[in-house]
Length: 157
Image (cartoon, rainbow, N blue to C red; front, side, top):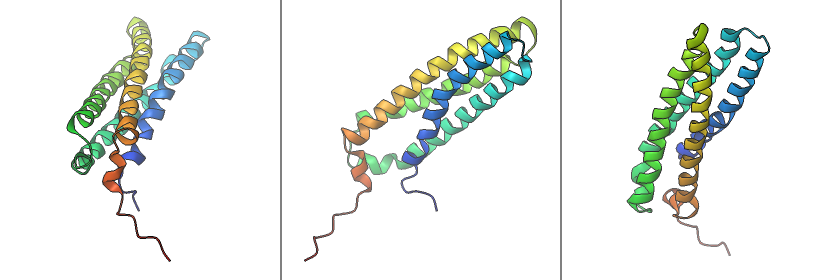
């Protein structure tokens, strides 16, 4: 059975993937510099980047699905800020897949794609941090979780 609400369970995936992606890209660059086959080594980074894009998409969609419930207990502005940051990360992650994919090309284009993709992965990490920080503020400062709490049962005697 799926958790309800689903969004809080899903959002950790893009955060983890955005944290791992720059590390994987840097390790791949080092391995390629030491003689590993560029396409085979970089393919893992491209797959990781694609997983991040998919996870970001799912996080945005589950957030949109739960927005109405949270709007009943939280003002619109902090929700909107979090939503915009999530959509920005989704766009960045899509661009990241394209940039990382360029790293599979041979020659100078592939080298440039790998370096630009690695730099882009750091920007994605920053975007993920911003989304997570704003989501945490929704829960811990603005009380978003209260949208899902049942009325407390009276104490038993």
